[in-house]
Image (tube, rainbow, N blue to C red; front, side, top):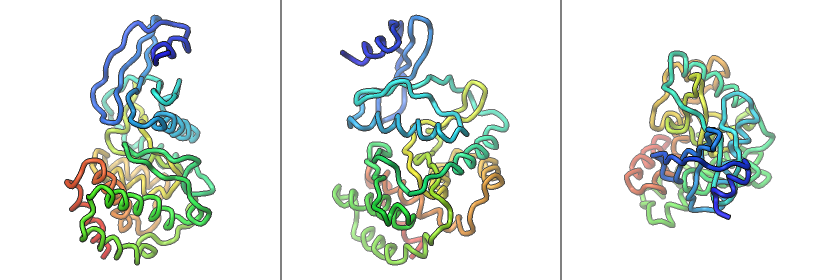
Length: 285
């Protein structure tokens, strides 16, 4: 039984039309329209059989916080992900202020340990979330081992880590406890990959989160990613900090959290991100 037969069986209804959606390099996307006119968003073509099931679980985890709208998961298996279709609009006045408040409230949804109950993906890259006992209780250890060191080792395997990058990383490792000191904050629910392409405004102009790489971690890591490529209004950050004030020194730590994503882009897209990664590391040396 192919994907479309599975969908038709689920709804007991025929698919009347399929419209391709442009953009995205992780999977192929299209809008599925049933005979009744109901629309759904379909992703297919993943390179890894675990990608769609883990994305479905990430969306469901975000929805538990009941703060920001998350597309409802309809069906998922190793070959496809079918979710609620949201007709996006242009963000209007007040969008980013609302987004900042809702995002802060989402970060109040906590776990007892860092990580997640399963490994998942950030882009095409595997993201390890299953911590040992000490990592699950220690954010510095978890972030260094499961995020930074994982990406560096992957870059080494792919021939993307220069001697300068490796030497600088080693120097960073020796002082990581001062760069990321112990925090009293509980592990927060993180989107994990929030850039301007991973949110939208719904029919009413309200924020929606899509394409997550969920885990529980320090909320500063989520905010740092929003600054990697821009696309967030100053009112977003002001509303966030008014709702859930950040710990002192968060601006100093921003580069260490950006580093994970730049190393990931180095692994995904090549040496164009090498010097940026090196610069972020050396900002602490």
